[in-house]
Length: 480
Length: 94
Image (cartoon, rainbow over all chains, first blue to last red; front, top):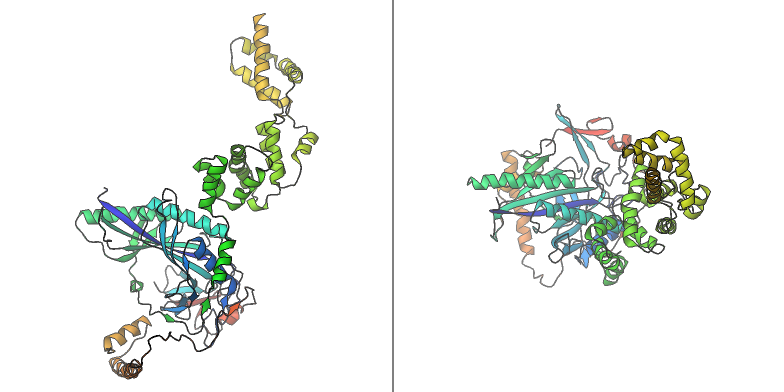
């Protein structure tokens, strides 16, 4: 099965999160009614003049820098000519000869010393959306998306398994999210990915015939489509047949790819410089300014978290995956000393509660200071970890001091032996049958009694002490 | 380079234009005449001269990222030969 080695390259399109389109002032809003966000420029009417969106330009430079690219000193735009109703001009304004970034790389999991090479990062306008009538002979065209700014990121054929492709996309997405230049929402099509894959005999230098894969709507789908193609091509090659160059579409329901018989296979785009757009220079000063402004990127942050806070790869990854959680973690550490405790509290409890309450993480009102206080209360034995989770639930949306809150709500853990003994007495009196059962050898009755004590104390009694004292009491009486 | 009838036909196809034999003949001869002129230009020495993509001496012309009102769907679709439910309607394409 390992006779053949897959070689994969990816092409990723990402919507930049600007307010307006790349060459005109129409809104980039998603989900508007059809053809309600267009103007003469994005409709491609004659005689109009596109002017580049400053923010899109800057975002493209930032993404190139974050992907370790050489940034071009000056860039121009080219027309990519093709006849298809998703672009009414019959050409797409893109970049051919002078992409914003070239020769970059991105470190991914398990390949930190051999990062994935990136060929280029360029800017272009998105095309419109076509809806094909299933039965009839017509297609419906919505041009709202036409002209939304995109960056296209093209990797070298430098990915060698479906898992690596998946890891690359995860890392790329997190990196772009850290830059706060895009939302990378695949459901809304603001991140799309095509893949090229070929097989060659293990050890060969020369690449095999490549297949282009389209229509994958999730990262998982991309991994599955690649896995399917490896199987399909392996069978062909083992039977001595040839793989023919073609574009294939992934069908997520049938879990297979099918050939797209299309004249689009003829890549004859006749690129030429767009005379409507002038040259854009990127000075050293500008490049350095953007470079200095780059945030700490996920890979570096993960390494630092492992080193500075003695966290496992797994924990560091969970924290870093979300920029907000990563910074919340470090803020909380200013108030609570144990990184592992903070990590667990945030990545399992807080994320879970926020999800349950449908609160966006970045909208959480509980401050890192108060979050640290909750953990301190647990550490000092003043509240149980169960109460801590309840506090999270109650306080997530408020800036309330948890110390005061537990006073007011009487949530302090009951740690006094005498207090707990009193409650145990009450519980045993109220449930004399359970006491008798236990004495007759029914061990589960003990659990029941512990539960009753917890109920009477509204969960504040220290469970370990309840267990111990109850055991002592019942076994002592038995001994009489 | 000669512009053959095949090149004209292929280019026509890329633009989804159907060209008759007479038209192929006419356009290839016309395009060849244009290319002959380009051949003359090619004789000029242009080493050390950067290509002129644009004659305007302007650089970094950018717009601020602000939204301005778009056309209404009615206006956008006004010239469309066929429309339905605010969509442009075109022959089915794959």
